[in-house]
Image 1: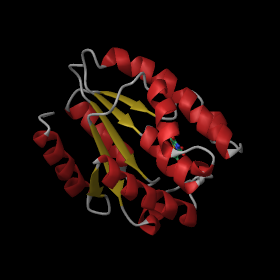
Image 2 (image 1 turned 90 degrees about the horizontal axis):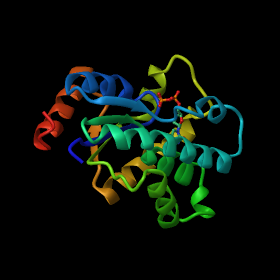
Image 3 (image 1 turned 90 degrees about the vertical axis):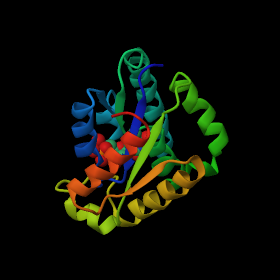
Length: 187
Ligand code: TYD
């Protein structure tokens, strides 16, 4: 694929969406955000397992678009499977019924076997992230997000994702992402 797939991740209030949109403009990449197609249902009150399958279904739709765009463009994706690993498998403890290895096999099928070139995790204390949020949804509780944060850091180590300090000033965070992009010859 000539284009690179870059995923921005982090807990709610980490500032990843602001940076993802900024960099999409800067490097002329296509911007997508998960969840997209089933967002309304997902944010309503449903079982964690239903949630997991809907995220997967949503992903299958989005990656069929991403697949096409990657032939000519870079794509910046605001959340993807790392969110499911951190939120559903770990924080909602669905790993008790589906192992990480098994889950990743299905997820990779939903992704049309496309793996990201870069994953950047925006890391910051949960209390700081929560103080940045105006409206809160069912995903935004301190104890829950602490589990999500811990999970992101664990998976980042396991899969070699970048972790940046998202508690810093917006310009410093931007600079860190620029450095990653330059290293990877994205810009
Ligand atoms: P949204 O309002 O779009 O939040 P954000 O701007 O922080 O992405 O809501 C998406 C929520 O869905 C967010 O709390 C994270 C959650 N989520 C999962 O739990 N699993 C997933 O696989 C994905 C993609 C998102």
